[in-house]
Every structure is written in structure tokens, then in C-alpha cells.
Length: 301
Image (cartoon, rainbow, N blue to C red; front, side):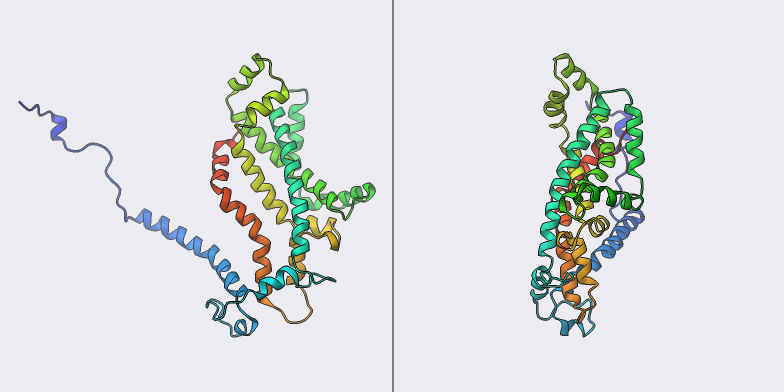
């Protein structure tokens, strides 16, 4: 005999399935589409313009694809465009940016991670004061510190050198990175730290054996933030460097704002894309890890 209960006769249970096409979905995806077009359209114009010759550009068809694709503007932007007194393109500035970015990222992240680890797990006298000073330093406008740092670098004998720029980027990157690492380490289970202490592990043992293996997401966040900030920096590069040590952004500015000869928009567009390839590549490769690092506690605490 079949048992028919009231719950069986009442019909299916649970929330009602949402409609695929609804006002909410239309508004949501419509907004995302408009925003995507807003950001993708300038990139599209830059790419197709960089692949056109100047006679085709003068026709004024900005959005039309190139009739004849040419990579000559890219070659000229990389190795022949004038960036001041020299006409070696962006190649010199690119390698200068690499020499500035790599050590700056490594040093700032290494120091900031240790600072954040110490502030989160090893309470010492004056830790709160030190942390407050770091937070305050993270929000000081860079322009306020330009001239004092010029004097300091000049007295140290490294003004205008790549080493001076590395020191500047390392110092200015540490406050916000220390905040990120401190908040991330605070979000980790405290029992792991206490258990390691009971087992006799010291400061560096806990840092290298426990904290570092668990901190891949926040290190990814820090690398993306630092590489993007340092690579795209123009202010420090133009103030603290000389023509022979100018980073890529300063070289790009000199190419685009050159007043000699004809304005070659295709070369300017190609130079702009080349300059932005490094941060764009990093975002595309590690974008998921960046989001995971933020969600895992990078902005907690």
C-alpha cells in the first residue's frame, strides 16, 4: 500500500527557479557589456592604429581595421623612435625598467613580509606605534617627499642612478605592503603559530616553514601591485633618473610628446602598447590568484 503524506501532495519543495531572462539579468549583463565596451574600445583603436601606415591613418577612419597590416610602427617604436637626444626607441628604457622593477619588487616584498609577520605574531614594545607610523606613511602624497629625497640621494652619491630609483621604490612600497601582509598573517589560525612555538621553532623557522608556504595568495597580490606600480611609474622616473637611466614610461612620454617632424600616431600607439604589455601580461596570467589573495584576507583585520 502506498503511503501518501500531506507533504507529498503539496508539490515540489524549495525555492522557485529563477528565470534566465529577467529584469535583473538584463540590467546586470547590460551594465557589464557597456563597461567592457568602454574599456575595450580604446585598446581596439590603439591596436588597429598601430598596424596602419600613416597614409591610411590620414583618411580618418579611426575604427576601421587596417587595409594593409604593417609592423613597421612597432619596430620603430622599439628601436628607432627618438626619446630625446637619442633615437634608440623604447629598448633602452625597457631594460632600465626591468633593472629597476625586479630588485625593487623583491626587496620591498621581502622586507614588508617580515614586517607584517612580526607585527602580527611577535608583539614587541612599540609595535602599535610602529604600525601607526607605517599606516601614516602609506597615505603621504609622494609629491611632499620629492625634494627631501633628491637631497638625500645627492648626498649619498646615487642621484640619477638605477640604484637610487630601486631604493626609492622599495621604501615607498613598504608601508602598504606591510599593511597587507600584517592583515593576512593576522587572519591565519593562531593555533599554528602557538603549536610551532611549543615545538621550539623560532622567529625565522616559523616564517620560512609555516608562514611562507601558506602565503602564496598574498605574495601574488603583492607582486602584482608592486610590478604594476613600479613599471607604470612616471613621477619618480622623471625626477630621480637621468636620460641614460630613464625608465620606459619616461621614454614613452618623450616619444609621444616629441615636437620634431610629423606626428606618427601609429608609432605612438605601438609604443604605448609595448609599454603596457608587462603589467597586462601579469594580470592575465595571475588574475585568479590575485582575486584569491584578496579574498583570503589581504584586506582583513
